[in-house]
Length: 224
Image 1 (cartoon, rainbow, N blue to C red):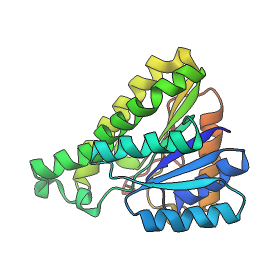
Image 2: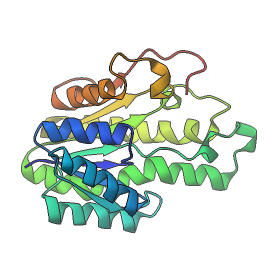
Image 3: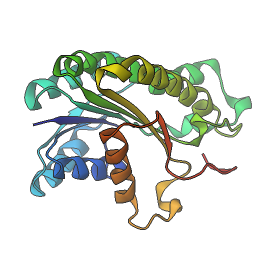
Image 4: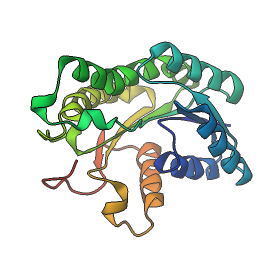
């Protein structure tokens, strides 16, 4: 059974992606900071017929993240799909003049460095299996900086740059690296099927050949 690890799993997009991939025959490793919430979500998914387990980790603490991914691989099987979608702290959405070096470093740790640690943890198994997929979920500041969202405007582009380099480096190894940019909060986008439409889009872009970056909707001024 293929396995997807969702880093930043929660009751919104993470749960929707878990359900979509579960229906497609994947087992799901749910990774976030709160074990109790992960366990509750895993119980919900299991009741719906999805094989799911929770593994607590903080993306700012590489040892916990790498340990969670290793335990998931031991218990569920090698990770064939990695989704990196932790929700940024509101502290990273401060105006640029309030951005301190310490906060910028933490935002980079959360986005770019966390992704690098996660990829290095799962990539050997993907290569051994002859394929896989890595999915980045980012807001609009990954492609257009906004002075009112300084932390993500610094960190998301760094994460994107790493992802795009991976896309080029792994293109010939059947490992698909994709980024979905979601400008603004999902409820405000008024999609016909809400968050399920986003989960479907994620499934589609990781399952077939295509470009590195996909915009969920066109980017407009004022959207994060």
